[in-house]
Length: 277
Length: 248
Image (cartoon, rainbow over all chains, first blue to last red; front, side, top):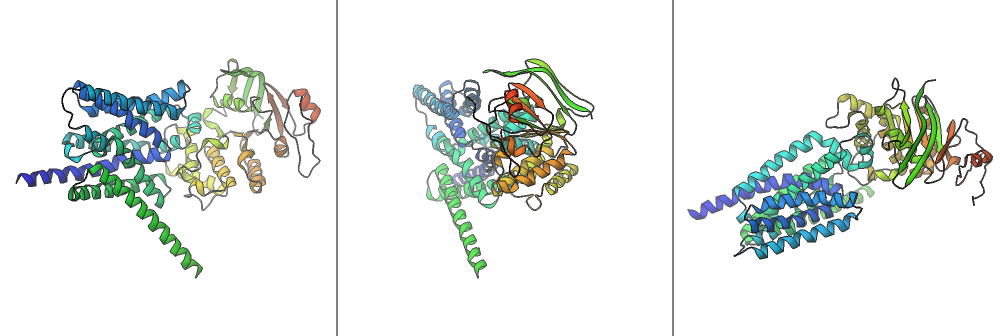
């Protein structure tokens, strides 16, 4: 009886988690991949580990600490590169390692055993709470509304920022808001895939999508679909094989990407051969 | 003929120092002015002052508010600003020019889409509405960015080095198109290559910190020298051409 409740819990969390993770990662991922912000996003992800450490040490929710660190590091990179004229990739590299260092120091200083540390590094569905799922659900709604209402403004600003700046005084607001939402998306998905793996959850689906389409809205939809298939399949496989969820999801997504890429090229080549006949 | 804008004893500067100094300059309806001058002479700065991106440190710029405001200036920046591999379609890029009027965009009205379609047809881009930029040639790309600049029916069109990303096959097409547009809007075209533009513009402005206006499309070496406007090269195609000696 107890086993079936645990199983039910696992399935519900897994399914809802897969839906919300793929929606948030699909929207934020399309934005960062198109805008070539993947390295910046890596910096945000790892810097947020500092917030997790501080959360442990002072005894508040580590996700909250991670969210604050994630957003501050995203805005910090912008500040350092634009205002202080530090090269952007260097600024990212500095904050990336600095956040990890803070995280490690505070977790080391925290008295007693820290059982969930590994789950933050590599993700674990077993430690995901319903509060985490609800937070991810709210994030999905916020992102859908934000991208739905401001789709064109977001698209045009990220396509050609300097042109948009010529005519619109809202460019910075949109940039900061979107980057902050990306940071929040990453932080909330850390519970699913972990600090080390979460970036792939955002970057692989859009790259699968771009095999089919080069239209922005199409990339978003295909990303969400690909993300859902990969995440859901990852859960099932990890459940039966007894291996870590985060790693299984990423592994599954990469396999899907390779298969789709090969399949697409194969059908194109066959098409060409047919054309020749 | 009504004036569109006038600059009076205007100066503009960056952190690095003064770029434009004590300029008097007028643009009238139906003008087609070639803005020439050496690199770093202030050509792009002149455009940015008109666009309101740089505020003059001295003097003033006034628009004829009956005809023109900041919402009716079209702008074709140098090619480097947009990422040609970005997943965005031809229609999207052209529609993004509506930002001139609306500042924040989400849904497009049927009217906007109709206008985008007109621009696509006018610029000979039919059939490429949903192509992504990476599929286009240099000349097509240039016309897409021109479409973005003119979708709002501007009264003044600013072009910054449009020759930079054109392949020579499209060059004449492009300048013919500008000639058509000139019947509806004034054009200010920055170029460091006056040979390429000399058979298209009606007049010149030489910008090299100071601005000298030259009210005809014919311009001689002596005049350029007198304006203190060293140009890299002046050359005509079929007509006799001139090459300036290098400056010391």
